[in-house]
Image (tube, rainbow over the protein chains, first blue to last red):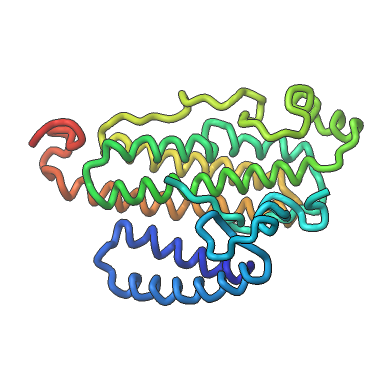
Length: 79
Length: 199
């Protein structure tokens, strides 16, 4: 998750930079490479821990409703 | 349309509760320069923006602010876990607790509920972008003020992240203002409102 967060943050920074610099090919290429890495990391994470969202390829219902939710501290999740 | 993701933009893991700190940090949830107002400001202003870069940047930053709202809610939630009545009273958290227990509700640091009168959507791109630039700086100042009261690294770390995002958004809005004025008459940017007047 730590790695997904880091790559997703990089992709987001490039995404909003490209909003105001749509002609920047270097940033667009970097974004494309970052997205590939994210897809790979996300697949591994979801196979192990369940879906990250409604559009996820991993569709386990129990894994979705099971904690920890993002605001929860792991050991206190679900009682 | 929005799609929820089961993760925070930046991790929040606070081991030690601190209701006194929660009481001031909640202003970034429901206060005048908080993340709720930020999100509503940008997502409301985008409809009248005439240029593609501006529609995109307001949509994206307005979306990121919703993620920040979730982070601030998480910080307040984790700072108010497992409290005793004595801790609540001692921290001055009793005035919040009596109305909301430890539920999360959008108020400012003095308990005033969120009000849409804290932001503007004026339907004029230059005016709205100046509002957005000011809003990012006001939120940055608020995070700097919050940091004056923090000594727990578990809290300082995500607050610093949120503070830094205000600086990045300020930069993007500055570029948005430049894009706007590049479309206008350089002798008089205010000759007409590009969101309303037909050129």
